[in-house]
Image (cartoon, rainbow over all chains, first blue to last red):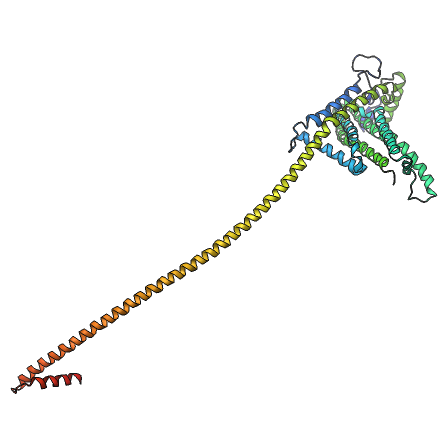
Amino acid sequence: MASEAAAPSGLQIHPMDQFVVHPLFGDGPIHWYTPTNASLWMLLTVVAVVLLLVIGTRGRAIVPSRSQSIAEMAYGFIYKMVEDVAGKDAVGYFPYIMTLFMFIVMANFLGLIPMSFATTSHIAVTAIMAMAVFLFVTLLGIFKHGFGFLHLFWIGSAPLILRPILALIEVISYFVRPVSHSIRLAGNMMAGHAVIKVFAGFAGVLGVGAVAPIAAITAVYALETLVAFIQAYVFAILTCVYLKDALHPHH
Amino acid sequence: MATTTHTNTEAAHGADHAAEAVGMPQLDFSSFPNQIFWLIVTLVAIYLVLSRVALPRIASVLAERQGTITKDIARAEELKQAAVDAEAAYNKALADARSEAQEIIAAAKADIQKELDAAVAVADAEISAKAAESEKAITAIRDSAMTSVTDVANDIAKDIVSAVSTAKIDAKSLKAAVSSRLKG
């Protein structure tokens, strides 16, 4: 590839610059309350959610408009997921899962806008959500089943000799859940955006030859659009799976 | 591949000088409290919007639509039943009308037949009366003709007899002779 030859000398590609959190106003230190680009794009997700689910459905039409259709589809999609994966008794937790899903899907799509900031590419954001899910689900399981919750780790259908080993594996996998849950989302987002930025850096120095990296950017962008939705879906469905484990710890 | 590695090492290198420039901004812990705070604000805001406004509204719209669809289907079912009933009624009415028409036709036919029979009987009677009358007239004519013939024969016979002989004509015997001749 010609781009590889051109890349080393003098080429300055900073694929990670897009993830830097900086204050919106001025250049001071970042306190917990400082309005930053991260907070701006998080609040824009709220705006997007309001636009789609509140403004989009204000007609309350029996025959829905386009935006109302999408809002209803999102509602039905997550509602059915909660019902199918976590069980009928889990529909009470539907608003929480819908909140997570809407935030992630909107943040992912907003992050795809050029020059924007992908909030979900930050491990701090995804880890907080994953930990919240983990703690909530664990406490819910203990609260609902007490000691019975430990049946999740003690697999009754396995031979007795294997049970301690399986229990160990189950415990480890249980505590790894929030890690994989959060890194999966942040990693996907970060990788996609960084790859696009790297190709964009090539395009900047190649002149006419930039056609190749631009084609690559287009392809990766299409893939990222898919990933943006799929990762939100995966995060939501894993939350449902964990919720199911908490509500029905018996295998 | 080589490029990516190069960029990464460069990036890692750069992280030493300026924390803000390159490296993994995701691992810059100084921004964590800020992101976490704003994330919580965002999630609470979205949760409130969803649970207070959006989800109840969408749920009610979906329920309403389901209700409308169910009602419409029931109504369609009703209308379909009504249409079936109407068709049955129509067919029944058609059959009734047909049989009534048959009855009327039969009655009309019978009436016409009766009238016809009566007319034929009247005509027959008239014809037979006329025939009898004619016959009588013919008989009368024949009788009168017969008488005339007898008279004419008598006259002619008298003339003939008086022409061929001079004998006195006995009127009685002449008549008897003529009538015996006429009969014979």
